[in-house]
Length: 212
Ligand SMILES: O=C(O)C(=O)C[C@H](O)[C@H](O)COP(=O)(O)O
Image 1: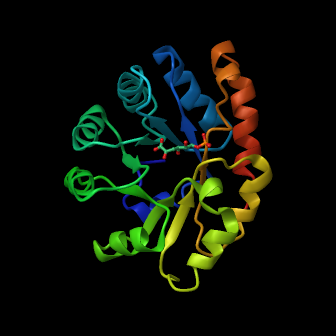
Image 2: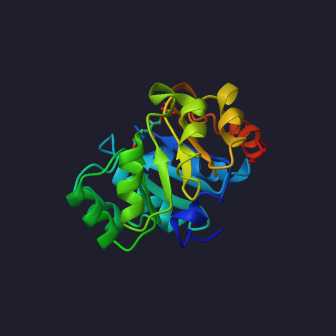
């Protein structure tokens, strides 16, 4: 698969976007390959570890068929660095005007995080129709997101934060949800053990979830 052209495309790449905290840069390429093998052609590496940007470079070079996102982008500088490192899309947990300007300046598709109606409207005013709902479970879960669909029917969301295999289906059943994000596919113990078959199995189960 190639990189998504728009944020709306991004919501349809797969039912689940695996959110990854990469501790060891050597895990990046086998991890991306395991997700692909399990049927998920998308990965989001969070900028939470020193290994993240080098992991992005390696995946961009060696696994170009996966849609490659960089998450936890919280500063304009990080947006620029992520783009230079080969990101195919960006994800932020929220957005200030400066951060959103910088993310838009990269020219990459992105999902900016919102958790209120006003934040969603602010992004809509900038022309965005696809966004992340974060922190999904803590902010009100699927019931909250369903309520947003009343006044904001044209907006589409990728809820992320606290979602598990058990709750993913509730979100995916909503008409304003394109995909969900979560770290449950890449648990720390499987990564530490290099258990790529285990990761592929989790990816396979997530890939079989159905959207509305
Ligand atoms: O890093 C970001 O940009 C975020 O906004 C947060 C992440 O998407 C969530 O922390 C993943 O959520 P969990 O599945 O609960 O681990």
